[in-house]
Length: 304
Image 1 (cartoon, helix red, strand yellow):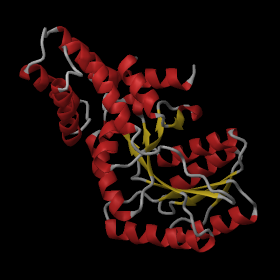
Image 2: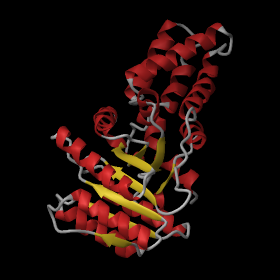
Image 3: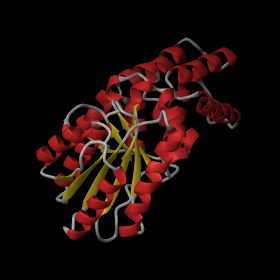
């Protein structure tokens, strides 16, 4: 099964909560009226598109009606597909790779969202592209995270830089960057602790990690990726807002899209945070994490 088919399959629950409900709604109306628009608005909000984003989409729908771009209820679905595709492609979703030397990915996110697994899958992805990969276990507060990263290192034949539990995360990052440069590694993936309870500590820790990385590679990290769990819906957006205060995030990795009806959160993240979704996960397999392609997402969501 190709990744687009996997994506369609993974979006089954979300498609049922958005597209299929719109299709059923349209059948019940001969003309577009306020009741139809109210129900459409409710469908979008219930699918975790978000209140603010839904308001923006509904405003576009009303403008589309005035401009005669929407002339019947049947025109609503293709119109929304175009709007959502345009919204998701407004900024580049491309991965920023270093022109020379190691590309450094700093991976952040709360515990439980699949952060360490995401790093393992990214390692497998880049290995499959013929690149050399190194992993850094800078989440030193959980022995399980260090051990889990070691397992991924063995699976993907990637060297893992680790220190003892509770050691300084910035020291791990420093050693990893030095090793990656010395060994001419293509991609360095750095895991970090997922603690939001003490935001000021997290902020200082991430600033310190960034400083030691930039001392060795001035334009790194090339990507600071925030991992979010799609099944948490609007909570994912709340998490993202908190993390943007702690670190300059370059993009989102959205995991577990296959297990939720809340995939509309992809649209909300893009619209409310102006932050590109760069990777999506639609399954547990190593190959089920792939770069995000906005048109494919919109097509899989609306055409099924």
